[in-house]
Length: 325
Image 1 (cartoon, helix red, strand yellow):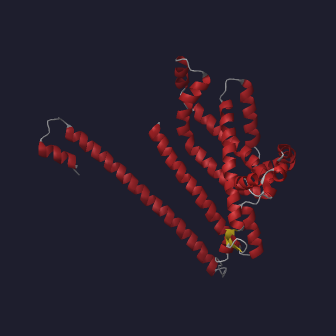
Image 2: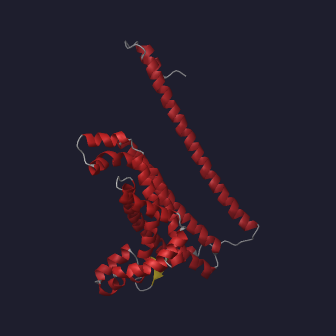
Image 3: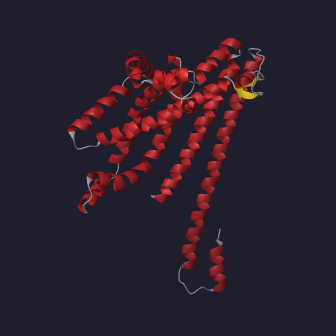
């Protein structure tokens, strides 16, 4: 199909030679990109439709084969409750568990990112000591199951390390204003030690994988970039800061997004050490109400929404990084 550019060039007899050919080529490229985006939207719609159909099919089978009577109305009672003293709605078990999950995710992401960046840089260091320490850390964490690591850390190391931080004394000595701020950031005062132990467990465990992502991102940059930076008088740190790292960031965003999504799902593991996050409290509600299907479908939907939102955010961040660099 002839492009409108070719018709315009022929109609107005432009003096530039081969302009219509170049504009035709540009038009074909635009049409190709448009067809690809249309195909992508069709595929996405097909995947979403298939997922909805699968969920509806499972619910139908449970309803017809198992003769299960669904009860969804009770969920609101465990999300919000009416507080008679304040005459207002207050968070109930499921919403409190979701808030604790968010706290675990945010602080664990920060800790894992700091550990991963530091250890990733050490993994690419020219000094043997730094490379050995970071390699031992990575190999020790990556070759141990997460449940085993959490049990080992919590019952053996956390019981010795966390009391040294004086966390239990905070709720006694701190002012009411400080307690209110810490309650928003960490959780109830009686659970400070457990939440901080869970954050350290998740941060150390996920930090090992982020270390390898950062190492791979740094080593993917051509060594000529480093040599060029050093040739103009930059130190190793300045070369890493201004030359290598900005280029590596663009390449590590997709694997980091996947690792952060994994971290969100791994927060459910800390329910094994009695941290009252969403999975732990959902299990309590399921046992007390016997509505197992509804509770776990609700929890699965919450985790899906959180992970999918993070995936969309990281996708936009990746596209923005591609425009910048």
